[in-house]
Length: 546
Figure 1 (cartoon, rainbow, N blue to C red):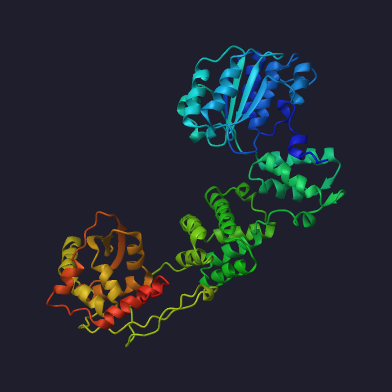
Figure 2 (figure 1 turned 90 degrees about the vertical axis):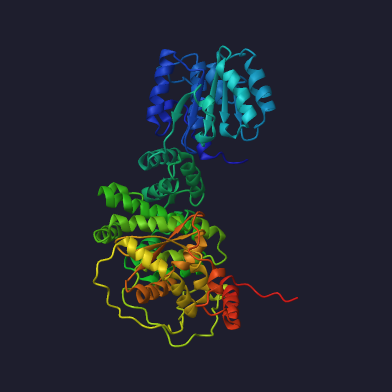
């Protein structure tokens, strides 16, 4: 015989037993005591927080023959039939498997027209109501507008935004909250006391933290852990089954990030792969970890760190790190790792998105010193074999020496407006493209497709591009430095570049006109071959010969 799950075995029989949701319990009890019962209720909120449980308690209370202060007696014939799931007038419907309009007509509308049998009220509990189709919602709307006598509808959903406003406006809405950690622990203590088994408090707290505010999830997890021993369950024993939140790894990774140790952080990521840790889960846990730290950094309240399952020494260590960390730094970290969620799902090299995140966080500053170019171009191709990417490898890019006339690095002392400087850049733009082509033909081709939008007081030149990949190529660290060096040589100003992405931007000059210009040399066969090799290496492709 199958063992009954704890969340079913200890389902609350009265309102007082429901964990949390005091704002809802108080309102419903007052309605039941005064007899001012609504014909339709809408319970919405996260999973496992008591929506269906309270719906059944309402159904039991409105039919209880010995109701006292709104609470059901659980002794009368009506309560007994409901507790034993034998009450024909209490109809529970799973909207996920009854989405069509025909099911609504047959199971709800036609059934609602029939008077209740034994019980005073006929109660329809529709779970996951957001799964109904539009035509089914329209059919349900009619019966909600003109409900039959002695019929109550209780709708429950985890996705309130999918429920039409016409339905919501005809129901009395209650928003359920996640259950707090102390309330979940208190509930679990009652269960282990009734089950006559010893479980360490540290285990219960870990269960509560892993349940994410869901009392049902906490009870299910406790049921799994209870099979480990029938006498006493310690934290060491429970860790065999408890989900691993990698808190020690998260703390160490956070310390490495804040210390700007790029190579060490990337090595930690690759160690996660070797240990078989799912990087998507790690990224999710890391975001929650950073969120809690950010909340503490803003409020200064130690309670914000309660959900971090670390010892006091680690708490103190985190606090000391935060004394030297700005709020903006934490916000940047969170934004960077948030942007990698989708990349982790689609990346062929699993660790690459997190490696790029580390580089973006630790090495975003551009060196201020002038760029030194190598004397001759390298013929080496980039090795992008995924098997060799387990560790970050430094790639030395040998760039050809710029052949044009070198100008002094010293900045102009004469005053010049932003508009005049922008116009000066526009006037010399064909020459800039020409010089770029001597260094990197592919970059010159992309730079010919940009629009010179504006330049600000900090000498940042904004380039308009049509596509995100165009922005990534032009504004990466190496290419932006090349552009910056040539701009310095041409206009005698240290100018940085930034890209704006929008389909409206029109190229300043066309590549076709650039090729036809008398001042520019035609594309050589070697240049064309280099561009072809660059494309093959960049997209890990292969040439198909017929």
